[in-house]
Each structure stands twice: as structure tokens, then as C-alpha cells.
Image (cartoon, rainbow, N blue to C red):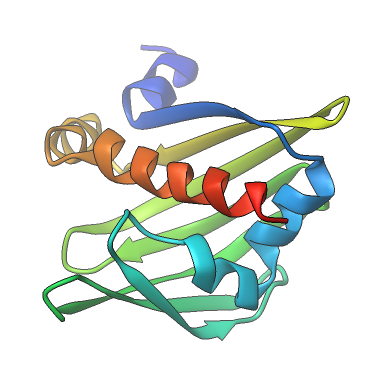
Length: 152
């Protein structure tokens, strides 16, 4: 199996086009005060505990579910290219651990093409995460981002 096929078998991808300039979308992803306003599926509240936006920097958020239960999301930034790419490790305890997230941005006139990839350690783990509701959860999150961007 080629490395490309192996990577694709371990990766779940969502693509969106936001009706907002790339600077607004980038800021929503990179500024702690904005992240707290949209991160997480609908109905959740997010508290940013740590947000050191640099390569090697740590991010850590607490997501609070409507029933009051909390879970931690955290990772370490491994690659940042301004208005192009954010790559980090990610743990969404207790549901998902040991993945890499890639947020890719592309300016398209006054809109932003956005691609989100989650790379799992194995193809089996990838399929398990997909069945657990990957697309529902992340699409809900990106719907919230879209609504947030409309207010900016």
C-alpha cells in the first residue's frame, strides 16, 4: 500500500467555504477569546485554559456539555503557516486520543476555503471514530463557526 493510501485510510476530512475573508477565519482559529465563542458542538460551552499559539505551544480547552459534564481537549502545535495551515496533536478525552488535526485555509476572493483533517494512528481507529459521530460533531462545530463569522 502506498503512503498516500495509508494516510487517506487514517484520515477523516471536512471541507467548507466560509463567506468571510481569510483574516476573520484565521483570527477565529487563533485568538483564544474567539475560540471560546464557537469551539465545540452546538449546546456546548468552551473555556480556554491555555492557548500558546506557536510551534511547540500547548492549547487546552474545557468543553462543558449541556448536562454539566466536562471534558478536556488539548494538544501541541507542530506547524503554523499564517493564513494557510495549523497542525497540532489532539486529545479529546475520553473520546479521542492520539490524533493529529490539520486546519487548512485558502483565500478565495472575499471567502475562505477551509479543509479540516483528522489523522488517526490506524485505519481501524479512524473508522471507529467515524462511527462514533465524527462528522456530526465536527460539522456542528463548524456550523457554529459559520454563525460566529456572520457576526464579525
